[in-house]
Image (cartoon, rainbow, N blue to C red; front, side):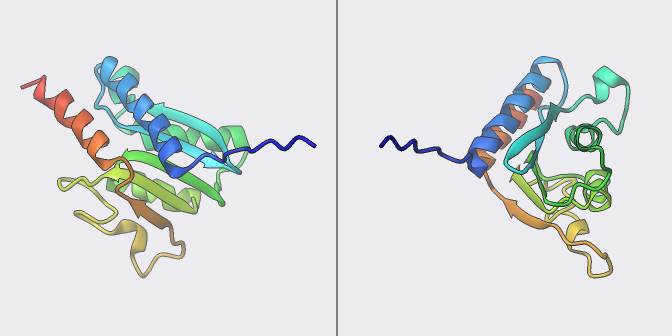
Length: 156
């Protein structure tokens, strides 16, 4: 009898994919932030920042991914999904996550200047909201931070 061991992807595996998207964004001259949405253990959408490319101030990696995932899943509600992002989301992106009803956010580095999950604001855990998002932070945080520091260091 032959048994195949199938290893399920982990948060680290998914965050590595988000980092790939961040690196691709950096190569395109965008701020290197990457994101992907996982639903039923499948990557449904993935992207990096596209604000410059799309001439769209809302084209953060998270927003691009939420839009694509909603289109692919044919539902504006993304309950049961997990969003992986290399940097702590801003208030716009955190608000979109609430509207989309994602179940879990996993992010890498903290954003002390604009993070809206724990650093500057706590949008996802505000007591008056009717939806809660589980949050895991610090996954490949050093890699995420190093990518951003390298990107901005090269522009100074």
